[in-house]
Length: 174
Image (cartoon, rainbow, N blue to C red; front, side, top):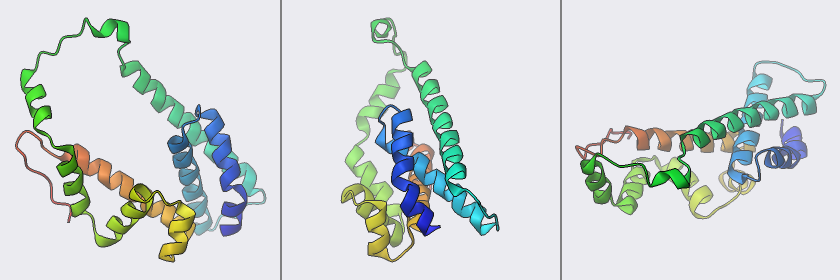
């Protein structure tokens, strides 16, 4: 696994990057997801005569999904020339949004994380350390570090979407 990761990670990243219009974050996510699938297949006992082909096909599938997601997002956007014709009817919404202090909100989310998750968050998103360096620093394998970072991103997304701003309450994730 480690040999394939070392050999193909950068090549897959460039492959995904070129197909995702230069979106580094989306390309990184696609590569990460690709290796997670590959790792799980290996754990299930699958053997690959040509892992390169499997990795590129899997990465291509994630690229297609990302493009579909981007296309859906694009459909939801209103062209700038039409934006002036849109009126917001919910005045209370604007008032609620104005009350949100995003720095306090971010700190609240981070405080909910476990110590290990806080460390990963700090290394990756505050210090901007690569997955490889995080792996070395924490003593966990690169695929495990990638998996933990993916789970951390998903957990944070879930927390953000589950918070009730109207009542000021939040779900307890600790």
